[in-house]
Image (cartoon, rainbow, N blue to C red; front, top):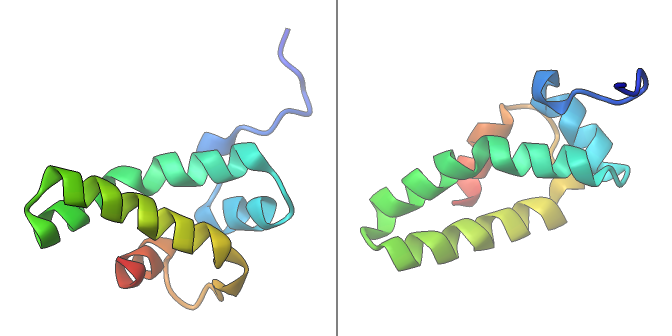
Length: 86
């Protein structure tokens, strides 16, 4: 039986996932990364034209984004913020 108090992260807005992530919700953070990882990877691949470099850059972007998540002000979309980090 499903837990009625369990959050369905797939239906959450990025801003909600960010707030939950900042407060230590690892599943929210995982959902946020999974949601945007292909976007960041494809952007990195276009920039580097190297699969290995794109993989490394994607990892670096998410490390920087996660460690600076509390600095995200919400003035732009989260994806735009990730683009700027990349």
